[in-house]
Picture 1 (cartoon, rainbow, N blue to C red):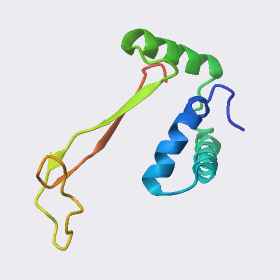
Picture 2 (picture 1 turned 90 degrees about the vertical axis):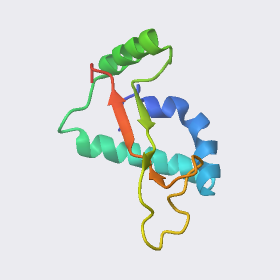
Picture 3 (picture 1 turned 180 degrees about the vertical axis):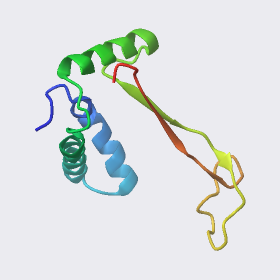
Length: 113
């Protein structure tokens, strides 16, 4: 079972339509998948480290104080890295910057976690 302060569920109604439209799947399906993935992460990571509800709240409070984003404990960003077009890739790596690129994703969790 997920902690009551699990942050994903607070924003699930906002995320569901966006993911649903992006992948052309129903909102109920997205909701079920996100819930299942979060529960699996908690179940398999619990023995490693699962923060308490107080730690989640403290991290969210610190993140909001510093960056002005409520109910957030971290951030994710990406950067376009120019690459040589892979063979037989068509337009898969073509981006709006008029070059071939990949976007590695970087995550940052608040230091309290």
